[in-house]
Image (cartoon, rainbow, N blue to C red):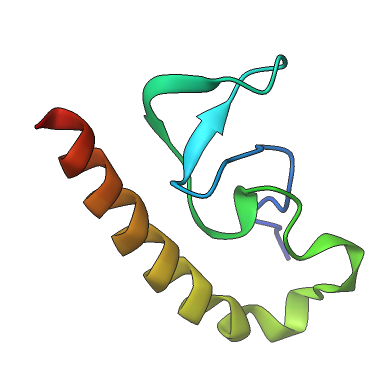
Length: 72
C-alpha cells in the first residue's frame, strides 16, 4: 500500500488563489482539490477517495476560470 495524496496545507481564497503566509494572493498561483484550505481535515479517510472527485472537478474549473479572468 502507498499513500498518494495530501490533504490540507495550502490556503486559498474564494478565487482559488494560493495565499502567502501574510494571507495575500500569490499572483498566477492557483490550487484545487483536497490540497486546499484544510477543507476536508481529519475526517477524510483513504477508503473513500472517490468522494473527493466532485470538489476536485469543481475547484479545478473554478480556478481555471479565475486564472483566465486574471490574464485579461
